[in-house]
Length: 228
Length: 228
DNA sequence: GAAAAATTGTACTGTTCGGTTAAATTGATT
DNA sequence: AATCAATTTAACCGAACAGTACAATTTTTC
Image (cartoon, rainbow over the protein chains, first blue to last red):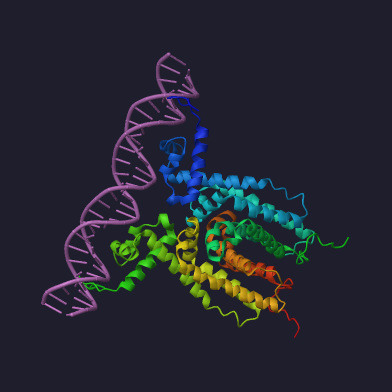
């Protein structure tokens, strides 16, 4: 504690870069591109402002790096999910629940995407990497849907892209607009209990959209015995 | 053209205020609170920068006025819709379609709400008027739902607030995230034809969420003869 | 171990930007 | 028509802010 290397410093470029990105992610997510302050980022970093410009060029370069890292982290997290081992209906439920929770837990990502949309996607457009990352997301939905349709449990005629849109949209909106919606219509949709209730309804909405037959009585406690 | 009143100006406070608000709405919607430039607003106004401060105090005061006007315009537009004269199912379809189109057409409103959410609703919180405006929106949904449930066409157990959330969420998200989503998954969801297709699916999703029985075959052209 | 390349710290700069000063013009009041 | 408050103009200001100059220190190369 008392004696860090005094007047001597070690070089560790990767750690410095990572440290800058960590702080910058927080600041850009908090304040957007225009609202973020380079001095503020520098102050909260272990290094100096000069380093930020050395590694990232300028403010926009830093923002782009932050955005890429955020998408990378988000999509990599999704890979954990093993859907193929579940029957289609259960897999879809799991996917929706995961999407909903994952978006909720990654507020920084949400706010960065909001910021990017305010800029009409201008910075995301420059990144080939981000587009590559997302191609797989839609594939997963397509596979799941095809599997369910083949088994007759999902109805025909659904566009997997729109299904993905539906799931992402509801998951994203719940978090992105929680401030204004909560203020206008009550915070009870956004506390712990409310969140679980909304999640359940999102699952319900998606399942009813996809299932060949509307889900049977889900009221009451246990599973309803179907035919065994 | 050649001879506006030279060196003579007329006083018209209301017109000046309205002119400032019009330009400011555009600028705040374009760039957000931090990104908007007072000089830019002033330049595009018929009046001067000093006038903005005279009427609205400071940048935040102007932003608050813009936000209030935007919500007012949005909610007032909704009053046109006469749902009571339609049977519940048709009324709900009309409501969803209206919501979807209305959000799409009001990009400035969407972007102002996005901006406000970036600020955690801090400015909306100061406005009693905005909250009052929105109370009626949820009432309309509640009445419609009650009517449909009474007739047995809507299922039991739906929270009107969550139904409103569902409709708003999908309508809002379609516009708010069109840039990033279109970039990642293709613009075809957002051109003229794509928009109509998505709208149809949003209606479909909401109806399946609400209806007591899943909607019959809607394929083919005209109305299916039901029982007459 | 000397030279070259990469990395870091300190101090500074030019500009942009929100906001203001001070005075002038206009319309209402008497 | 003199007076006064409301409204408008043009020029200006200080702080905040993105970005830089330049030297110092560390690591790599030969």
